[in-house]
Amino acid sequence: MSEYQVTKLNKVVRGAKRATYNVEEIHQILDDAFLCHIGYAWNGNAIVIPTAYGRDGDTIYIHGSLKNRMMTNLLDVGKASISVTHLDGLVLARSAFHHSANYRSATVFGNVRKVEDPKEKMDALACILNHMIPGHWDNIRQPNAKEFNATLVMAIKIDTASAKVRAEGVVDEKEDHNLPIWAGVVPIKQVALDPVSENDLIEGVSVPDAVLKYVADNKLP
Image (cartoon, rainbow, N blue to C red; front, side):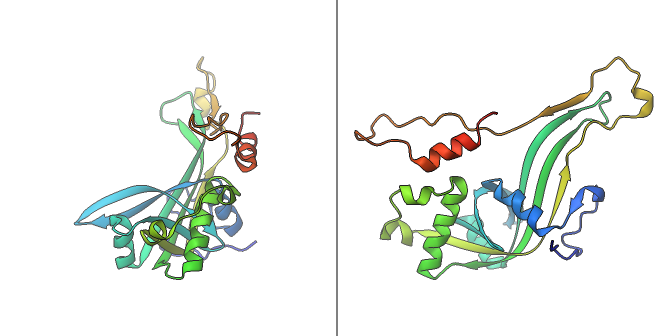
């Protein structure tokens, strides 16, 4: 198992015992989500934007309009930081102080470039869409020339990263264990419900297998 080198940039300082720099574990956290949050500075203001993404190896792709303020800013700076978090449970302790959450979070740092090559750009758009629903790119009308040319695609190479994971129960003070107060964990899971088809579909169009598989894989057990 390979790990990202620990530097001043990616080192987890608070809660270091929950830190991991394992490449496979961090990639899995990224692959289990579809939305990331990207921070940038604009006119002296700090701004954080939720953004769809796709991962291909050590590269993360995002896309937007040609005049997207965040993307043009990141291209000017040449670097980006991306954060992804999964909330896995509410940890309800006996005391207010020890309430917490179970989670998996990853923070990625990388260099930014504009994707110019037409094939890589189209492949990147497919990567982002298939990151939402695996295999769904083959079910849709792909971008026409006007749409393709109006879309800015950016590649962020993962230079380094770190993650924090909490997956445990309540950690209460020993003297609180005898209090008549309930403590425990409420698991949290994002689930998919049955797809709802548009009313104006032409006759004979059914839900694609890729969508049905995604729903089946993400339903409540």
